[in-house]
Amino acid sequence: MPELMWAEMRRYRGWALGLALLNFAGLAYLGRLTDMSQPNIGLLGLIGAGYVVVGHLLGGWQMWNYSRANVWLNLLHRPLAPRRLMLSLVGAAASLLAAMIMLPVALALPVASLSGGVVEPWQLGLTLQAWLLALAGYLAASIAVLAPGRWALLLLASPFLLVAEFLAVPWLPWPMLALVLWLLAGLDRLFKPDLASSPRGQAWLLLLGLPMVLVLTVVMQIGAAVGTQAVLAAAGSHPQFERQPATGSYEALQRLGPGEQLAESLGQAQGRKIDPEAWKSLPVAMLYPTFDRMPVRFQPGRSMSLSWDWVERGWRMEFSHAQQVYLAFDNNGQQVGRLGRQGLLEPSEPIAPEQRFTSPPMQLGPWMVLGPELLRPESGGARLKTLLTLPGAQDRFIARPVALGSEQDLLMLSNRELLLLDRRGTLRWRQPLPHGSRDLRSIAVLKDGEGWLVLMLEGRPLEPSRPWQTLLRVDESGQGRTLLSQALKPSFGDAYCWIYWAVSPLQHELLMALDGAVFRRQGGVEMEGQALAPPGSIQSVGYALLGLSAAMAAWLAHRRRQGLGAGLVWVSVCGLIGLPALLAAGLLMRPRQARTAEARQDTRPGPRRAVAT
Image (cartoon, one colour):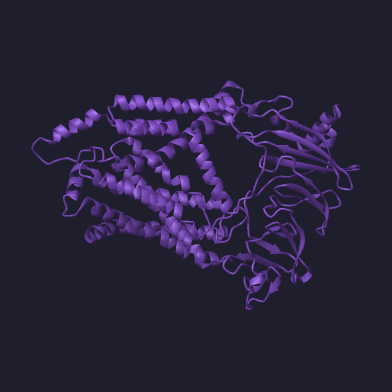
């Protein structure tokens, strides 16, 4: 076993060295362009996808070379059990991937510190995640080559389902580690003398069928959505391509400029026509929800930056997850101080527990946000003053402040209300969001002689939502009066908006519940909204597809002469999951007579072949 492992490593050592140098050079180059100590989560996902492809190439090439008939028999005729042979090849590949992926990522972290980034030991978790991504790609490609059917090519996509899930350390590697172990167990079932026959037992159907169902679900959902839009575009009825959208529709209102939206809404409220041309040049402040989750300690990848410039002092501030304070650097990159919950600290001064931030605070305009609190460094930064605390413990600010009018007041948006503050941080008024922030698209605010006009536009054109238009008049005392509140015609019908749900209703609900639990665990903001449920017609279609899938699975099991137990299992799975499971059943079920023929052929003189029972 060690001899085979070392032989494989020597065989690919040149390629491993070349790819390791190329990987390190690419990461070092990116480190000169951006802060790789706190990279954007989109960039991390793109790099992770590249590592999966590297694993695909290694696994596909290695197993293709061994899968040829004479070479495969020569490999398995060694005096070792097939499982130990498999572990030797996988161990060699894991070692090579560690050299190509893990080591360059670990070396690139100190290079990122040369650009002024804060590099800390917990970020080594990224090296493990990168290695697991490449190893999952290797195992998926190995299965695709060795499995008895081209259906296994679908498993190549399985690592990509988790490539953008960057949880906080120490939870970061666990989802990918689970996938690696699952794929390793599936590869173990395929490591047998006869590659053309199905593995023995039924466990391989679960090991390979479950990731296949997940991949098929995503492919069917995306394919159905893209196909529907293509058909609508070809027919000339795509709502986003219409030159003149229907009056009173979400599409018609969101195409207008901020001033025109206000003019149109005010005209509807007053029952008259208002010329939109006179409103185009008015100073309308636009506010868009930007954050749906808050920064979490020890979480790699960011959707919002934890670096900002303290202009008053000429410092660059970088958050330290390990110390739970902001580190201050001058223009020469030298640390000159630290900013804690109660104010400035010297670089060498011990950090008291009350000085540590409970979670990473963000800078929003001239202020800082820590959970529901709005903070401002006092003159000189001696301490942080609390300007405002949102009423709910789970309330969070979800947008950057926007200046309003010549008075330079600032609009702030939380997940439950809209607030107006002056430059000193004094609250002028607050207005609750009528339907929460989940479907909120934009808020337009205009200061006029009678107070403020506030237009809230809600709707997600490609997802289930209830498009809504709300126009408020807020007077000088902060009292709001509703001028208009009405539903808008959605861009797409229910059949399109609920297409993801209809493909696999129960699976969709389960995955959404799991995603919501992870979302809340990783700093997700409670985004309330109007209650949504699939319409009765869509529910009828979805559950009818489940019944049809179960019936088709029963017919397929009978036609391919599966046993009673196996047939009932397939019918139950297809009845619960739906069309993705039915497609997987069609790919994985092998006719019983074919296995019987294999058994007859196995009784002839000569070397025996592995036959599935």
